[in-house]
Image (cartoon, rainbow, N blue to C red; front, side, top):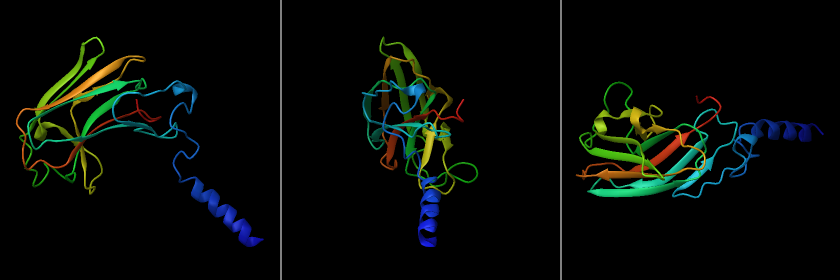
Length: 186
């Protein structure tokens, strides 16, 4: 009997650490009951319990090694503030500039337009001037600028494009992510 009680208690304790086990892909609460993302990439909803970064849209790998242009369609995003990040395979520095980052002069142009062709934002800057964020000691860093933040309007479609005019063979693996929402997010 004690064994059963201990097992039940342990399962209850473990359950609290399983994030959003009662959450299905979309429409898990009243605020986003009609969420239906149909654009490019893979949108994950971590549920209403997520403090920050509730929604993560992974648009896949971006090749920074050569000249490139990529365009992605965004349809059905929730109406929350998103930050468009470049997640690079390079650790976040503890202090100051990143060490041994040979792609700092690589210029990346990121543009977001709505379905009418109206420009929401446009950024064109070398990676060394982007803001580095993430967890200190993690093998990856998330780069963004103040210009790559936006809040989609409900029902609108968007197009985000990335252009690299002159790639860098030393550039690390990179992926394009849009992250936003959460009960702690403003």
